[in-house]
Length: 218
Image (tube, rainbow, N blue to C red; front, side, top):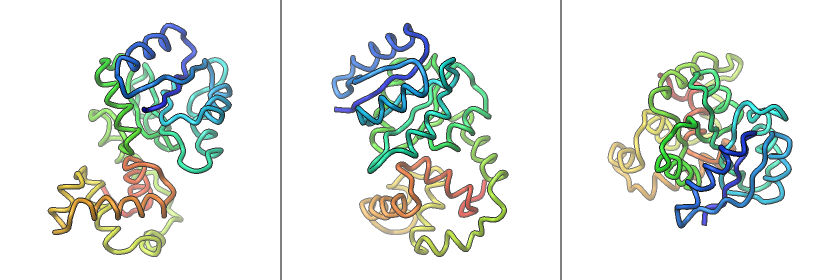
């Protein structure tokens, strides 16, 4: 069962999301709140798998809460799915920068919301395809100039670097395996070790790390 916490300052939005998510037999909404500080406390207490997080809330914004939730987390952190009415690259960029695993709009169809939660719980990130390329390009442009690519080479093996580069091109495990003439299970194992080494929880944040550190280029 996938455990979910809902964070939004509008009760009607939370109620709607609860109905949409709990139709799925494998998802349970275990808690909800209306502001960032409350979200930090609630997540720490309930330890959900996924948090659906609003961005703009009068009592404390969702991006700050996301950063604090992930900083406080011990063990495997929850996946943060940022849900907002604002289709702006800057929101997407900031959400991914603070460690969110996905970004969708509030008018997303119910089936897409359910699938997004499932994807994040399974370790896959999600960003609307219309903004993905622009955001990745922005990460590459903004990457810290004092972070040398050689540091990434020291951290990962050559095989791991090859897999991360192919992942950053949008390839699936099967496609990566075919490209490198290895088994998909081997790709999955390598990616698991990569995520542990670089300190991220999912594939999307692995791609973000790759572009920020110069391992991948647009």
